[in-house]
Length: 145
Image (cartoon, rainbow, N blue to C red; front, side, top):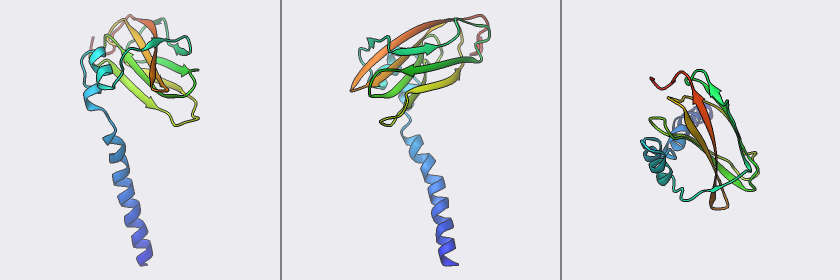
């Protein structure tokens, strides 16, 4: 019976502290930044080189900015992160996805867009940053506008 209690306590502790460890990796300063430049600076992103090996599949016109589907993939060897920035959103840093070595750098996400804006995707690979941009026109804003 003691071994069952120990197992339950261990499971409980793991269940409570494991999500807290993931939350500790969250960059509050970057995600609360009001400008894309400040957000990227907080992430340590300097000059990013344009790359045709980053693909952004997003609608040219989003009728409702509350739900804009975006697919992102990177063909850049050794991609370890994909970062999504929407320049004109109130909080431009939308997401950062980290990948383990060998993982396929592909993400499909629905985002909110307050108005027509560039969607920038940055890839991190080999200590360098690469960028691709696509404009999405929004007819009805999804961020309270």
